[in-house]
Image 1 (tube, rainbow over the protein chains, first blue to last red):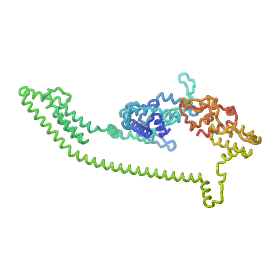
Image 2 (image 1 turned 90 degrees about the horizontal axis):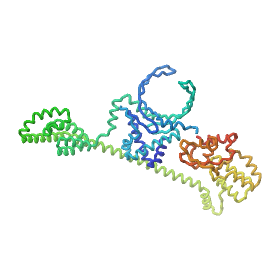
Image 3 (image 1 turned 135 degrees about the vertical axis):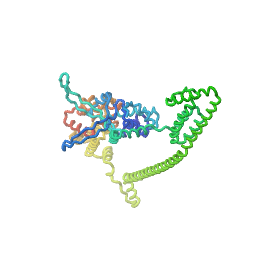
Image 4 (image 1 turned 180 degrees about the vertical axis):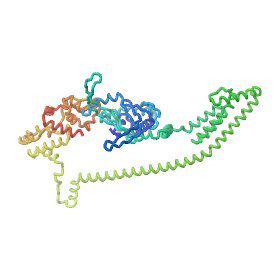
Length: 96
Length: 465
């Protein structure tokens, strides 16, 4: 499902206009980005939590050239599905 | 960087503010967004949100494991894992956070909290002055300060300093009732110690002193205002000039955009016009040619060639008239077969039984040829009899419905064919949709038959792209 389908789906279910839905989605995305970049944990109901996490610096070795390089420490966006989401999507069989 | 937990509805207020909608509508939208994401995951297995990233289901295969306590082997069944991959730009932004955390946080905080409005700032100053018991001055100052942003900021600092100075003097008559400010407390006590004796002796003299003090305060505040106003006036004019330039730029941009929109509209209009003209010519070519011939040599009547019309229609007409023999009847049957192989399966198409019923009225040779030629794959499939209707439940799929009714998952292709008017693609069935389950012939149910197996495989390949 792409962004367009998402907007269409929401517009259909909430009976809002498409442009209004798009505006709302953009605002949501902007707010989400802001809060996440601010280091806050955001809980999405029935999906999980989004959070910025620190990744320590580590040394990687190129398997062929054996050159060791250091990957500097950085922040990463981490998503942790909650139990409800795990249960909900566990059963779906992709083959049908 | 406060590690604060926010629930989904904590975001509602800021989203409503940003989008300029009511909070109730925003709440409705946010619920719908979550529902849409879960539904999209169930349907397609992935949902892409622009600016955030992609939620996707990743199938995990079943694997063996060992119970540590007992040493028994057991199988962890396969399941779908919900994963999230952030968008590239967001990921970059997140990674950058570690490089310059201090400065970026400052900027972020500044931009996050919108500056207080002019009126609010003025009100604050008015409140401070009102606490001192200088209401008329406060009102005047508030009115002046409301003029510009910068003036308000500077005035807050200046007036704040003044208030600290004036506090002890005013509190003489209140006899240190309000001793909230720790710093001023000491000075106030000193002042009261000094002044209590003269006040008790000469009240009139104290009143005169107070009047003098108030006059001083008036003068001081006026000075402050005089200092601040010329600078701010100059700044405000600059600001106004900048804003007007920006406005002009915006207007020109808008105009350009509008111009482009108009151009696109007219181009599409012309193209459509040309296209329709071309189509009209092709459609009524014969009529035009006939009319042309009629105009130039009215004596020669040239009829339009019948080959121009679609063959199927011609044959059907002839069939009705009963002019032609069996050979063309075979053509009609083959036409039907072509129709079905190109997946134009409708309830209205001619059924095999109908064709068989018509043929005996004609020559028996035609019947033989049709029976020998038409294989199972080429036979037109029509769905007129239905055993029941099935309401699509949550997590259901065509294959599961097929398994339920026919005992095999691969036979969903026939359900799909029977419901093509409702379903666009096999994977896009919706919850609550009512599907008709066709009553299939026995020859379509026996998947051990290699011919049917071949047909089903072919259909699955065709539909399940």
